[in-house]
Length: 135
Image 1 (tube, rainbow, N blue to C red):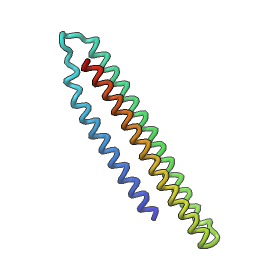
Image 2 (cartoon, rainbow, N blue to C red):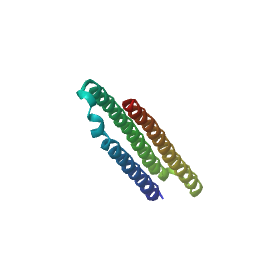
Image 3 (tube, rainbow, N blue to C red):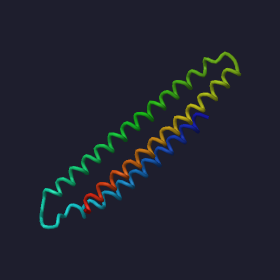
Image 4 (tube, rainbow, N blue to C red):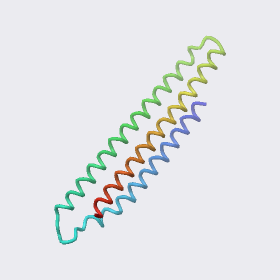
């Protein structure tokens, strides 16, 4: 049962990382067009580059925090799984197993909800940067 939970978590995390990678790849394809300043002004280009650097740094920090949360939840699940051996009878083992299962899936749900909120916030910020630059 734990193998399936961790396989699902791994698959979901890999899919999320691939999805984010594809989005960043698409966003960065827009970068060369923004680098060319009309009238040769370098100050607006430098401001845009600074905004993009700040945006990218913020995204990396959020991704790191998300990964730390995922690893902490995984470690807690593993520790709780090892505690199942402390059960005194079959009923207690079943109860603890069901609780661990529910906690694991609740943790996975919370992590993915947080990732979706962060992604939505990133899209909003990216759109703001793009519309500000176009104006």
